[in-house]
Image (tube, rainbow, N blue to C red):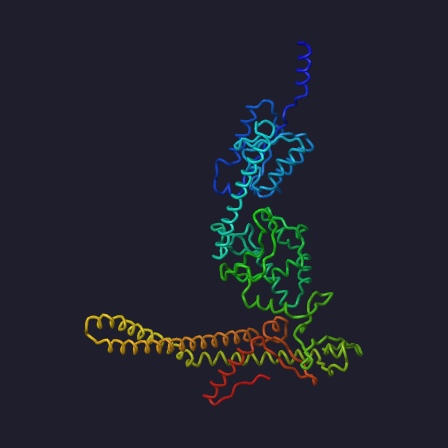
Length: 560
């Protein structure tokens, strides 16, 4: 009898295997920022190792760590390695400090413990929650309830934390504070304030080159080829060279893409405006980012030093609205591409090249007449050399108008004195208004004290209210007039400066056309009409000059 039981006992001892235990440790960014010592990596490691020392039947297989990873999903490097080792190394026990370290996703955590671990024969232990799927003494129903309730609480904490963090970040965005992990190319974070951007001189020079080339006529694809030909590192490679752990799905080859160049040319960050909230995570459990509609972006103006001035940026944006193609070999657009249109049918003019007797003749022809239907439009043509000469002459003439405007503005002090008189009138009306308000405030006590009758009180109060209404109307009208004068002065000055920059120009360039001209309409006889970018400002300048020279018995130089 004794030998029989001894054999059973020895056989049972041979069948029992030690537990190959994996210790899993996780610390989220939120826990680290709160300096939560109880959740720290060191604290978790000490607790888990102490548990192993008290249980000699368990063998330490390895320690798996995810530092700075959210518990709302299981896309973590340490956890992925653990699951691979469970399959390959025969790990059959996973120990965590508490269920929150495993994860804060109710659905995924529950499925992992109740289904996946059970099928793989893996024992799961959460020390602080008193959960041991192999020897906790709890029946299946009680354990299911305990784990489920705890996981729901953990997930609710994650949801609450996500709402609080999102609110804080949105508040920072609305204040114009930068909250990104990496500054936009061309900028870097201020060492003294991580929410403020300062210019990165090396990268900023590349941004300026991109804008200059685009306005100068080079296509986006041409700019991309130039950057790669010059072996300028793309934004991803540049950040890595600066020591940042930055990854991109599309730029890991170190080469520039036309998509990146286009994004740079449309990015308001480069004129000093903070643009954030462009992408948004689906929710606290789904970390996938999705694009946000442009009208929902958070934009705060003038938060940092601009790399590109607003006028240059607007020139670049105007080119996106023009339909033109760049040369295949040069990557640059024709001088007039996107600016010439038929005055009658409104279609673009196409460039043609003829070679006769060893000479090359270039001209532009109406696209409707050329391709679509000869009967749909008449023959609108203009030679390139004659058009260049005429347009540069027109620009010189406009520069002369601008010079006259500047001289008139310097000589004529009427507008300045008028603005000053308006400001003085506004201040006088404000003082009179305050005086009437004071009188109205003293009127009621005088009536109550019997110094005036009720009828007198009502009559005086009605008169005061009428005076206040008249004063408010006068102040409002004066402010409107002041704003009008300031607007005219600013638009006139901007117009003058724009043309004065090209005073004395001998050669017509594409930046001239982009900066000054909206379109050029070609008529049937080869004549043309130039439409300026800011025609209202030009009309205001001509009106000012006409009024000024009328007082001087002179005439303003008319544009042709």
